[in-house]
Amino acid sequence: MAVPRVVGSDDVGEWCGAARVRGVLEEIRIRGLGVIDDAALDLAAGLTVVSGETGAGKTMIVQGLGLLTGGRADYGLVRPGVERAFVEGRLVIPADSAVAARVRDVGGDLDDDPGGAVLVVGRTLTSEGRSRAQVAGRSVPASVLGEIAEELIAVHGQSEAQRLLRPSTQRMALDRFAGDAVAEPLARYGVVHADLHRVSRALAEITERSREREQEAELLRLGLAEVERVEPSAGEDVALDAELSRLEHAETLVRAARTAHAALMSDPASGSDDPGAGDLVSAARRVIAGDSDLDAELAALGARLTEVGMLLTDVAADLASYAEGIDADPVRLADAQERKAALTALTRAHGTDIDGVLAWADQAGRRLLEIDGAGDSAETLTARRDELTVELARLAAAVSAARTAAAERFGAAVAAELAGLAMPRARVQAAVTQRDDPAGLPVGERVLAFGPSGVDEVELRLIPHPGAPARPVQKGASGGELSRVMLAIEVVLAAADTGSTMVFDEVDAGVGGRAAVEIGRRLARLARTHQVICITHLPQVAAFADRHLVVHKADDGSVTRSGVITLDDAGRVRELSRMLAGQEDSTLARGHAEELLAAAAADKSRP
Image (cartoon, rainbow, N blue to C red; front, side, top):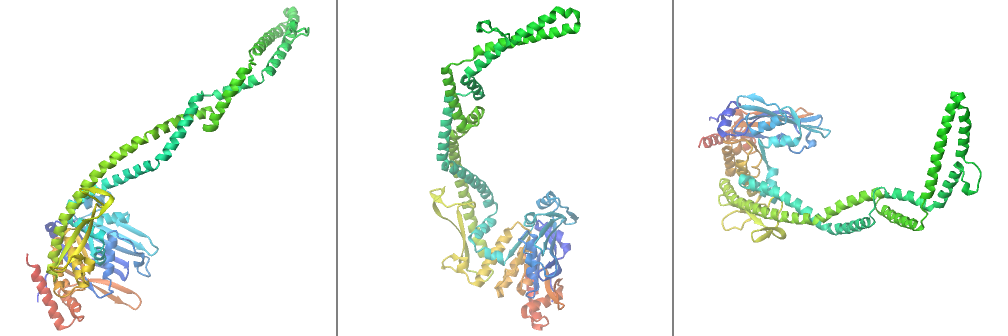
């Protein structure tokens, strides 16, 4: 019986152009990760299925893809006995795409390919706990690798299905399905929400510190009033200290000046006939003057005595003037001492000297203006807060309306998928609700609790059959039903995903029979517009593959190795026989396998 042709790498360019995807993952190379020693997955467009015995390493393939998309590094995955684990992916992307531009922005080099540009990404983990990411030959942070890879690869696995049971993840799933209708107002909402938070925090700080500022302002006013009352001038304290010293020692200073004057110049009025220094110098000058014409050198000495006499006369005159200028007025002394006390009080309170006091007064005046202006700031912030609150409420209503509209379409899309998964009467509701909160955001006639993602709470609810109450999916579905509901949601989300490569990790767990066939059919249909990689244990799903890879494990007695083989037609029959009955050579199993392959081929040939 004929087996459908496997899509090969030669079909990638044609398929990419027809499907208008962003890229194709052509190969994954894994070394030293878990049980995988060194394996390469040769991938292609369409649906690629990966199967194998339990423990053969299928999970490590998903782990490797997770690392390539910037996932958290689990260093325990490094294979025992090796220093590092390495994962590398080779993709073909449009040369003029936004992803290619981003790769060039980080300094990566893209190779030319007939189907577009070749992008190589890689991730290395060491047993010592280090991680390194590479994009097109350039070392980058893992976050940059994730930013680029998430535009190309979307992993839909069992862990993600479990996360869909969380309310926050359900809201994000609905938003992802809604697309730009929610994304655009939600992006603006996030900006306004952050601004409102910042303004509200600043206003609260101003309000909480108002009493402290009032106390500070009162102290500043008292200090400035004291400075204004005293009216000190720059350097006044230094000049006043000098004046006080003269006033306090006036008699001593006058006596010293007069005694010195008397020593220089005789004063007949004093009753003393003793000559002064000036008199003696004058006498010496007169003696030399009589004989100065006899010798030039003696004449020069006489001239010098003349200069000394004139200098002594000037000093004596200054001493007399100084003595007369000394003010011994006790009233002025008291005034100066009082002024000194006032200046000292200022310096003790506001600075080490009067210049420091004046500098403090200048700063205090500016600070007082700032504090007095805080009232204006509070009014401005209050007005801004009210303005942002109105804008945020408007955006919250727009986001909520878009979510509500998308929820109806989402529920209908999931119900359509469930109909083909042996749950024809089941319905899934994406309930968009709000919670009242007196301290929340006024939206319409209600005051609602709100956060960075809006005012909505999203909950996925299952109605298993008409007349049954809607219950949260984690409570209203059995294990098998929950798997099918999660798969239906995954398929719906994957169809709306921006990535071009979809990876499904055993999302068909707990499903069998007719539902398993429908899973395969839906993955094949999705593969018409996306590259789909599915890790599965179901032969009904594997039969729909365009390319079938099997992971096998060999044991040499000491080291476990894994390899990946691309199956030909006969190999696919043997592998499906093993998956069906555990017996590759069973005639009945082989007949059933060929029948599955033929039925899948006929189904895929339909429009």
